[in-house]
Length: 195
Image 1 (cartoon, rainbow, N blue to C red):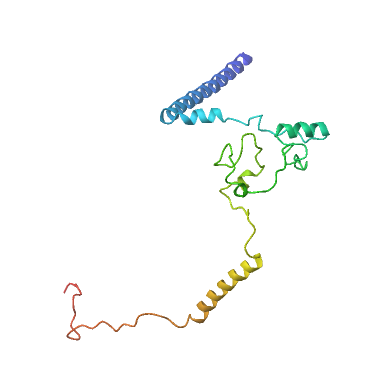
Image 2: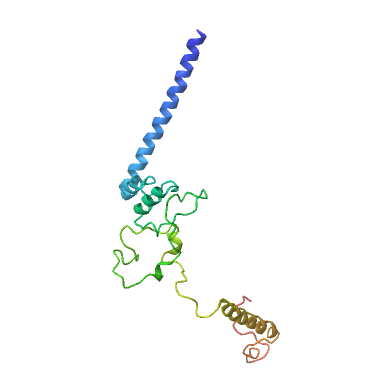
């Protein structure tokens, strides 16, 4: 009798858990339907971009000369141009170490496949492409003056402004005005007070 009661209790708990799971599933489906009715692109985008594409993932670090040649061919580089990142455990694998040159330094008149990005089809992207993109600051050209000159100019202007503020703080500058003058001294004019 005790075993039957325990079995019935466990079946009730299991049934209750299944009902809760089913209710959560139905609520999720209804919520998804509401979202897709308003903007169906949300669902398609989340399904389309649900995970990492295996084609984007770099292979393991090339150790033999044959692996280096295959990796260079994979990224469209010659064996002389190809140099992978050092194997320091950051996960770059066989991805090529490209020169740190900003996009704005590339020739603007070259007939690129994608002129707005200044790159051709199958050109490998820099591992830190968001850092070297054209919407970021890049020092493509050499500076006109040395950094020492820029720093001295900046500090000179800031020091001059601070010195002027400090020395002229006691000398207030304002337009001199007299006290307001009303006719019939002592008589209240337009005070709007209740008497």
